Image 1 (tube, rainbow, N blue to C red):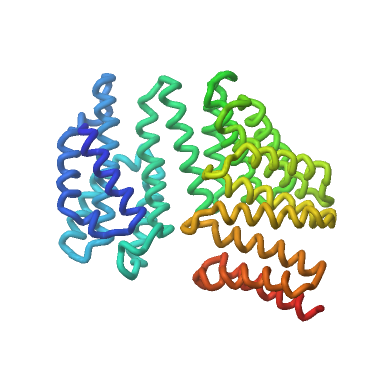
Image 2 (tube, rainbow, N blue to C red):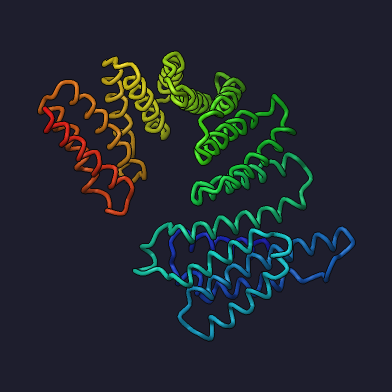
Length: 402
């Protein structure tokens, strides 16, 4: 198989998932790459017995999967009936044997069919990260990487690919709320950890992913009883990370968030656990220098924990610290960051709590101006816009109650 052609077709599919630019998949160069790719991976015939023939069969299936997905995408987006019929027929022929070995392909095709029934509108290059296309892209990545993994026996080469597939399952779960995908991710991570030595440099990171996936499974299941396991996994990741390791502050910050979630999962908030969460988050922020891309995220976490502890205890200095940490987070967040509006809104909610305590026009103005800024900067269908509207209404209601 021509690896260069294979990568070119995959990259074209990836660009389409990111930009929704129909012209990219319909370009003649893409069709030429498909033909060259298929020509470079001849079919060895059914059920080959020799190892070399089995490897050729596997690579042929990889080529058919990637080529078939591009052809099927062309079938969906083209306005030419002849092209639609030809590309659709060839895609189905190529993908038929792939469906037998990678069942995820069926779901992928169903999503592409759904795209055909509900075509996008507007200028294609401006329709960024359409959820249906991203899910289709993720499905394809899972199917392709599983085919690649099947032929690899060396753990050092195999384990990073398994972790990548686990991450793709997690991404898909976050878009579909399917618990099964998170459980698949956990099974893959546990299998990798089982063969990862305690002193292996990648073990702390893999433990950290396990903690994240455990937590997200609890969220999807609405399970308030299992946070102890997520905390234990996050603590294992932090404890396994050397003092001078660049990821130690990240693992420390993640542990802080898991401890906070455990503290608030019970009927009565555990202030002792919140104290531990604050200590961990403060240390992680101190270890993150100005200019580090992670600074905004870690200070936002610290802001959240301070605010949660204030709401549980009523101790006002925590509210002041929450506002300060939140402002630091917002200042460190780039203007084009997807979380900027949510972080501004979170600081606004802290100002609302401060306004409820002191009822000054200055505090009302700080809370209201931030919420209004988010309202003006987001679209009505955006959940952050809706949250900003609710927060603005709460600020006005608190003002009327003076």
